[in-house]
Image (tube, rainbow, N blue to C red; front, top):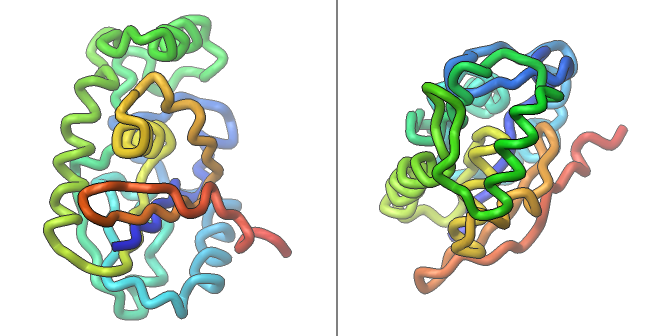
Length: 198
């Protein structure tokens, strides 16, 4: 089974460097709409058997043209972005933001903002969502999720170590190709962005 995992296309919050978690249901901006079009044009002949998105509209908008052209899709709420709690919607140069994410690298994976979610809490639902896809038992699927969600998921299934999450660099519509075989996951390609070359 091949999992093609992408981060959603750009939103205005991304452009402005604003913390955008599960409670911020933003739309793609003009750059993001172009990125999603370029992704579609590059991969429209890939014949993804099914597409999975989170419950937030920026993921669906990223793959909308596939769906409009007949691709089967499913929303999996478990793939929503992490909740940043009281700091949702604030600028990501916030000192508390860096302190929190640095603490995760140091292994303090239960840390979270007030009313937010920790990586250890998030990974439970991420794996639940992934197991749903594995149970569907298809050969080639596309999964559109979020930046932190992608990092948490990959560091769990590849490294079994969430402190490694930041090694998974991601771009808007950048794609990771993951092979699932004999109950093991391996990275085939990382953060592919060839479709954005003009």
